[in-house]
Length: 238
Ligand SMILES: [Zn+2]
Image (cartoon, rainbow, N blue to C red; front, side, top):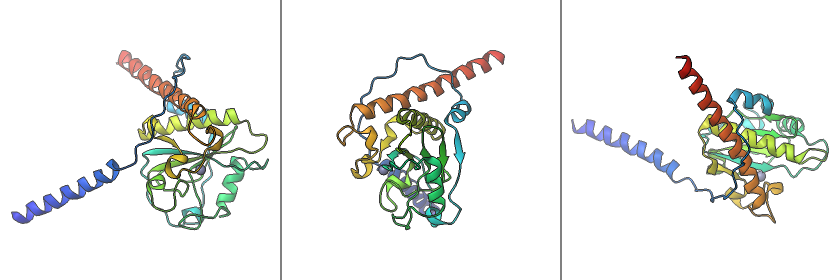
């Protein structure tokens, strides 16, 4: 019997230990924004996914940025911007260089992230249960617990349309992974790097970031509205 107690005690410690790791995750700064007063659209996750136009274009399994895969547990969404102004540096181009292992750096020799967004589409580079190397060096919370999204800044790319598509993608991921709005953060949150530059004011979080968060909030509320309406319709039918 004492042995059984010991086993139960050790299991409890393990479980509590796991909770502790998540409880100790850093708290993002409070962002004060004005909610968009526009009427809500009645959106299903599938409708929003179609609008976003996500093309799965993964780095080959076991290679380059996926050479030492480790599990991702999504608690945050980290927004970046590429700082690559070259006219050809759109989402498809980023997918292609990631697949060739041409973006080096980080603890495994290659940088990697989950999505690249431009004004016309989103390319997905990693499955969402695999950690990327984009927010911090190595196996730290910014990589272990966050989905990485890069926004293109290439010449000719429509930036407001890119921000809007990114806000929709962030809202969809919040919905699918039950991530709270406060956990949509900029790269700056993890390391102080001035990223995503086009959404910062003088290198800091300010009105531009608050405006972006307001768009994410709007689409998040549209999805919640859509799901409420669907439940209501189902109840009526039942
Ligand atoms: Zn970044």
